Length: 397
Image 1 (tube, one colour):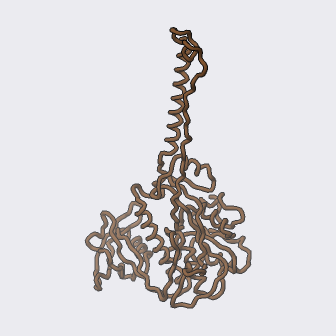
Image 2: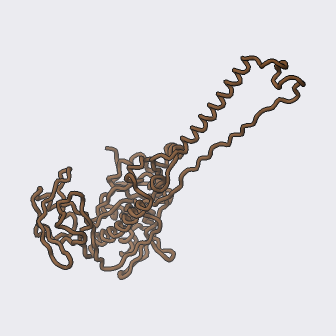
């Protein structure tokens, strides 16, 4: 889902040690406070016993100090826990989650909640060993090695920027997928946004180039490029791009990416031209995982009737302009957050099913979806009052 970032490291306090020296009182004059006759030393056995006690006390204090230090040492792990939910149909207050200008809108009842997770640790601040161990014992939280969530060396500023960019992209994709689902025409182009190391397009494609055709076929989506390269099996592709208002033709020989797929080595982004304005307002939440729920919220907002029928639905999943639903992180915590927020139906990406099975909260029905059309059908079925028992669910392999 999109993730909301929360920095709440555990605070561990060392117990205070109060060491006080005991003093004997009332010893006879002329005798040391220990009972040995004047002028004689204490028995050797007594001195050795006192020394052993002192050594044991020192060793104990050292062990305690080392244990406390070890418990507070930062460790390279992150913890995910359930975050808040947000109803994409909420229009209360000055900033509704989804605002539309230039197209009719319709009131909608019920909930289409997007779900979030808090991520502790990593660039958000180090976690202690005790904090990670406590989270590991807590069944409502998940613990992961830091490098699985954040690339090595990622700073807090970089993580926040990447999360913000992912959220913006997911919102644009959500509008595109919703309009496509509703058969509302809009403009869509692919633009070069950078080259990979060793790219075969070096010197031929520049940042800002807009892809027009490949081997004579109009480029309407990334799928067109991928299908043409796959069909060519490594043969040179003729690419026409728009650069500074002019069409430029380049012959580029794709390379195998090591997984049997031919690529041009170009990073691409979509440029959309929508027939009306859609604004999504959601502070302090980032990442791409809200895309599916944004799409459903837009559909319900610009179409007559009530998609949910007043039901409380939640879900998560990335979305592409073509409406494909992709996997996200923190699915277990998002299901927990959805149920705690009152949802009874949850839409989960099919690719997350392995993490869904065995972790569904009581009272929550989880439906697996692969695309926006399936998700829309599931919500409409639940909203119509018909039984939802026949909807696809996650099962063990």
